[in-house]
Length: 296
Image (cartoon, rainbow, N blue to C red; front, side, top):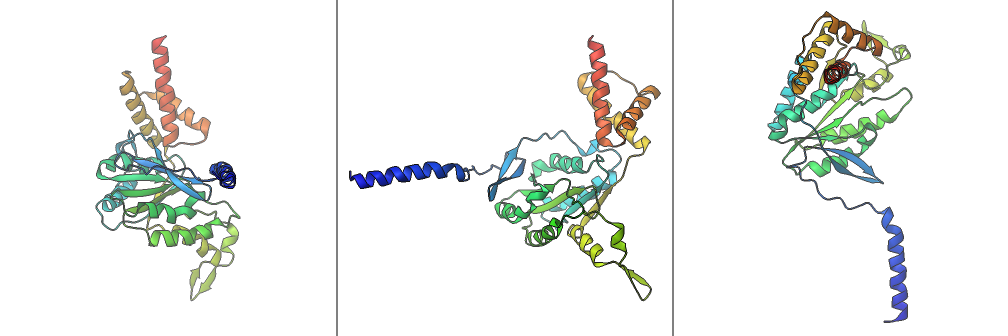
């Protein structure tokens, strides 16, 4: 072999060895018949869908005290699965009140009918066009799920996101829908100073441009669902539900009484919050403690 050709091949091999770590890895196509959920992962300037192992043990019946929200989002999801017009949804309100759990419960409810879930982080929403492009020709119905979509004071990203959502949502195929959760109704902090420039025209109040700009982002969602803090009675009902579930699984006999309610209320008071997440955590603590004492 010509020495010059040998030297060229050696240099080419050396160059490829150095470049290979910089190239994105080849990702196998997902089998959406067996994959129920995935997460969009950034990989350099591109990204890919990473399959997730999800549990389908969360059911709509486990969500106590949010029947109206379950009914509205459930009906919207059923329309979507049936190929009928449906709205992108924003679930907003107090933390731990069942927003994310509702979305995951709907996956469990409708996975057999072809519903699939793709988690995408707020910072990756600029990749929406790429994600949508991967899904448009597939037979399944995809909910893109962005948990905790919100912005802090001073962040200007929401203006960029607003234009991305506009383009991506308006051009999205009919098998893609966006569900997002947030602790804020308008996703962006509302300052007292925003109200200083309201105008009065013919006896009517008109919001300032700053307020209009912030509201415009949440307007991209056609369905708004509100989740409110739990009352004590609501909280104790959720505690009873989860203790019943966990105790049944463990074969533990139990009975609700005033002493149990007092312990549950103290647990919530110590955390400064009464919500479904707190109720579930107390139920795990209490059932685990009973089983430990039973086995000693």
